[in-house]
Image (cartoon, rainbow, N blue to C red; front, top):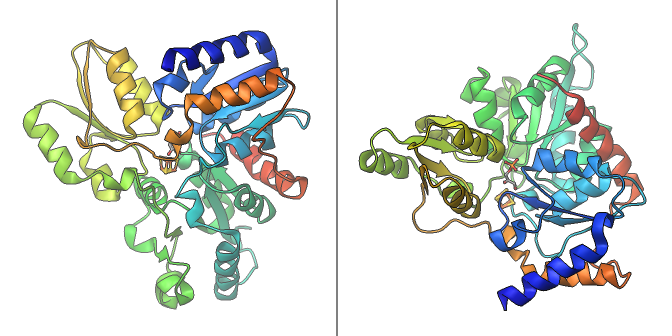
Length: 357
Ligand code: 13P
Ligand code: SF4
């Protein structure tokens, strides 16, 4: 039963004490989040993983790329566990190393490899945190950087200072929404479809490009629509509509505000009692916020359901299983990034952690 599982998790955590640190992403279900020592967005969790050097093991309740990141930034002696190894991210899977390398070669052919008079290289690769460690390593090796949804503008600014243009992957929406807010015209952001020659573009549009957007998206966030926003406003006049930047551009444009999960949490925390919020992000976070802030009216823009099905694969049963394994001295479901990938990936991650607005 739920209670028995909770009791097993509690008991294992009590035995392990500070030897284990449990991290939980905002999108995890409540039955898991209640046991997390740290809860946050993907940027905060990467920092927390660095900040617990005394823990022998980090149990990461999130998805695979987050556990990889924790392994890369933590001490080499620390083990990182993903309670269910099948918890991936469909967006991260949309950009594989081979396709990105092919794209890179095509861009090199088109733009050359020489810096301009200001020392800016032809292209800076920027990968969203939601990508494999191999792609972070690619960025590390090619003068590039990682971003999350909470620092995408800062990171793009960093990239524009060093490059004539940016190749942004895997999430087209985060890339487009962020660059558009920074003043990049939408027509100078061609989409790169890895299945087509030149990504499906002609050389002229690539010649004008400032940001080349990979053809990836989040299947949870792409479900939100302008119609849902109109409906929420009709039903609740004065509602504050906040959406995640993984939503399509027209949805971000129609919303009152957009921001990372941490932005959404802080906006709700800071609001005067009695506020009404329509939120465009994953349902587990929205429902938890609604329960935590009963003084407000908080609901999800999508009234059907929009859970992240892979985040949901971290069932409390798996958490109990991995923690009990640790009590017996067994490290199960370890996520380990090989050094030849981890070293350059860390370069790209450290550039992100050091980039300041
Ligand atoms: P953030 O945690 O950066 O807001 O990202 C949301 C997300 O989709 C994580 O997978
Ligand atoms: Fe990936 Fe979207 Fe789930 Fe985040 S919410 S883990 S981007 S599928």
